[in-house]
Amino acid sequence: ERFDVIVADPPAFIKRKKDMKNGEGAYRRLNEQAMRLLSKDGILVSASCSMHLPEDDLQNILLTSARHLDRNIQLLERGGQGPDHPVHPAIAETRYIKSITCRLLPNS
Image (cartoon, rainbow, N blue to C red; front, side, top):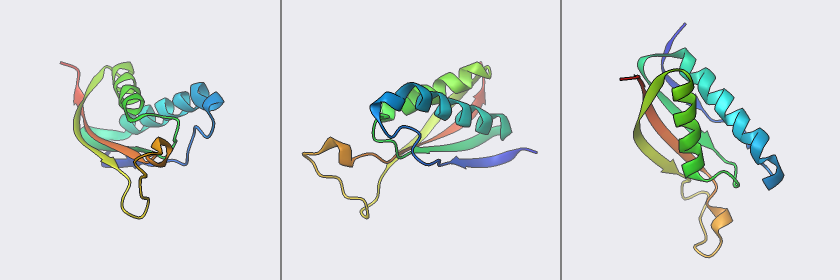
């Protein structure tokens, strides 16, 4: 079975810095499996609430997952936390919710 849209929004896989390697692997496996289930030109929304995973690292995980499947992604949107999770400008750790919406494309 294939899906047009998949939202991958797991609990935090990286709760401490020492969990980075295992957590990044878990995000990669989750996103790769989601990509396997997407229909042609399907949309993936990948989210993370892991404070220790920067948004750029999440993007790199998506790129790596797509390449492993001989596919490409087109970034459609980046998202963050809403007003119910305020960000303090002096405390970077308060900006921990992130999401990336992308379209899975054939490798050209």
